[in-house]
Image (tube, rainbow, N blue to C red; front, side, top):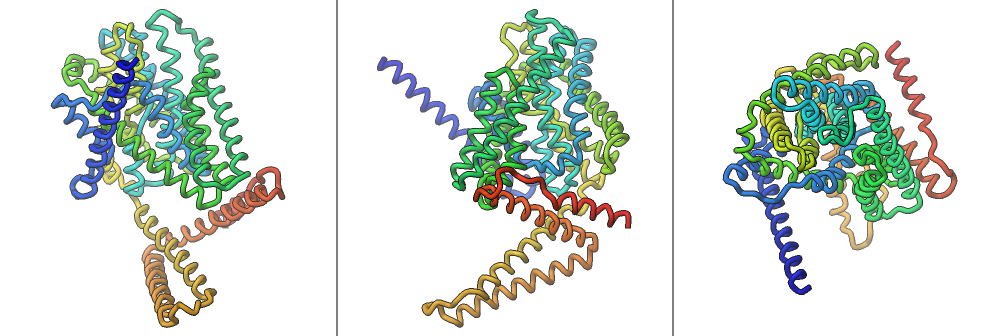
Length: 527
């Protein structure tokens, strides 16, 4: 017993040392990427992959990367953070392309990649379909971060991120349905596959809604930021584990919970300060997890093994690019034909095609292939090869594509203008506070006047910058109206939440102003 205890203690110490080493390298890369200007041109997550490849090349292995580590420890917080931050209003506007890409696009990728590998290589069809399922999940973390940094359109960001959120779940479910075919434990039956798929998705969505709305109404009854923050963390992991245990898709359940809590629960059950605390917590956690995952992806590459499967990797890369093009351009045309007026332009479709990277989810499902499968190593080699190509070739050239297609637009300007508006509101509130403040006897009046004049000077400076930008760029005036309308809707939602907390309402009311403002906008457009 003493020996076992000593072994366990050594194992814990070794794991802790490995964890600290991985974290230290990740933070060093993050620091250097901000210090050296030439490194800022490369997305942070791609820098981590490159560093990981360098470590793998000199055969330095930081830690063993198991599929359970990604799926059960890393994947839930990454999914929850993305779902928490995506705005339901924006997602509704793009529901058709997101749905088509996440459902039909996954099917096109699975069968397109699978048939290409079975026809042009020696892989059996069942094994090739497994590889197709693993590669059907897009993981554009670095691309979305690049969109935000460069100020790409909100529509492009929402479609890319929304597709990734939902197709991860669909891809994992498809993989679980197909994995038994090459093992001989199940056959490819269309009716049985559809029924099983609907069960996976139905259980995931059902449990996600139940937990999401349950937590939303629970947090109305108290206001303790740290507790509410902890509840969201438990919700992310607990939902995933419970749903997987009950035979559903944990990925889809976590996404559902994240969307509900981020768009509904945080409005009716959290005050603005708590929402900010929770958002900052998840932003840190996503940075933390991404730092580890992308570093370990590069570090786990086996160059010798990849070299033996170059023919498989080349066929897989070509089929990934072709099937992605069919999905984006074909389904994009259908979306534009039958969807809303906010259509995807050809330039935006090109970016969606080129920015469809593969990453941690593909690696995780590939490593989860049973060891008894004879072609397991070939599948792993294919996935690692394609992931490295998409990250290092497509990921590093996405900024060039955005610039050439002129899709960066005026978003940086709009961001600067939004920041000035926020500064003006903040300074006005400070000035209001000072004007209503009774000067205490121990406060020097001259010092008080100095502080007040200082704030007034800053406010004048901000006002001048705002007016200058509006005169130079008249379309920015529309941003004033949009922010006013968003503020009105937020005030209405916060009022309903307050009434629920004090017991004057027992359910959340639908926003009345939203319908009124939409009708007003329609009248303005017609006028």
